[in-house]
Length: 270
Length: 233
Image (cartoon, rainbow over all chains, first blue to last red; front, side):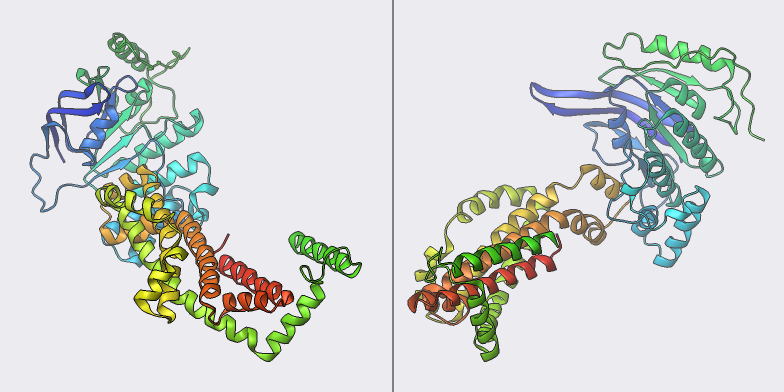
């Protein structure tokens, strides 16, 4: 599904009058594309995602889905920085939550949720409440909920930012594995340059607030990708290019990861 | 178990003090005397009658009071405009002593059950309504976003998000409602001199049967413990 953002603007009330969070954003997401949005903290990335998800109305501009002929608006499901699992529901019911909202029968949604939990290694925790799981398992369950539900596009708002480096890499790989072949368009917000380069087809660099597009970079790595392998040498070069672009941002917290000592080419997954 | 042991120790100390004559038996009769009266009252069916009368009034008052409080609380939590409109009204009416309005209810409804039940219902309404409104507003906004983003309809929102999300606080409100309702019911029964546990308390003072007073209060305390246990901790 194609998504077109045109002149998107978002103002929110501040103590000294309206504060402009997003200013005239023009952007297009191609069908099946994995698009990354990267920018300094507080630049309005999450607000863009919230508008894309339909959770917040833009102050001006439009979000269109060219070519979409469905009766209902296309489903744009979101994964949040926090897992957003309902604490009183079992993991199974949490994963099946989207299917329940979409009117899938109890038996069918539980079967699909169970299958997804199996795939992600969480089968033994189907009856467990989220607060009894580790952060990585909770975020994995949130991914399961995202992928098991029907959707045309997925919007991910720094879903792995609170996880340790090892868990993050594992989940990045699981995200790519789950996504490959779904044909779903993805918009992935992050402030981790390397993560954006390893996951995305294209990275859109955003300015500090108010959010505008500084540059768009096409990531030249083939798919399928192996996150757990060593990153290709181009990652280092692209990372510093993006870092330089973000330098003028006054309140930036975007930090490039240290350059690897050896950087052999990223091998496509077998 | 430790709280039961503490209670037994207190009763034993009281018993010893009463037998040694360290406390006035007219004001503090020995626990065994209280227990004797209680057992006799249970055997004669007198206590069962009073308990049944009070329990019936409590149910008639708490049912609608908590029910309406629940509806009002959830509605206020879900509709900010309604909350803004009703919150000052509730803030003004809640602290008003409902027992002070008893003469008005007696004039309006006569010396019947209704005059005794209305203050109970009123006092049960407010804690549940206030807790309900706060409980719904305290649900993590992220969970609202998740539910809306996944397309949950109104019924699913209520069943999967609002009710379970607000239940812990709501339960505390219902507990407060129940406790306040018991207090007001006993007061109303004392003031109207009717049957029921409050009537028994009043009668015990009139006849200086202090063991009846303590025995009845023990039953009231047990009632409170049972209700609160039913609602969970």
